[in-house]
Length: 98
Image (cartoon, rainbow, N blue to C red; front, side, top):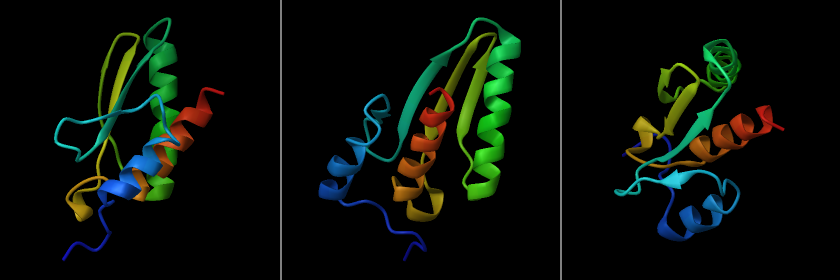
């Protein structure tokens, strides 16, 4: 049994309301969001801030960066899908942008 509980369908519906800019994956195992910045330095600065949040939470994103674009996917491998850890980190990431 996973150490961290995966969200039920009902819990997932409620939780996604707290992160409306994030998109649920087709298989409902994660959420993702794309971010655009004016240049690579701004994008990398954002990634550094996210990295510090992720390290404190011991919950690390799957992500990619191309110049000013950062794509983030959050899923909880220990839960085999979406958990409240993903929702909490998504909220913290959103808060970085004000």
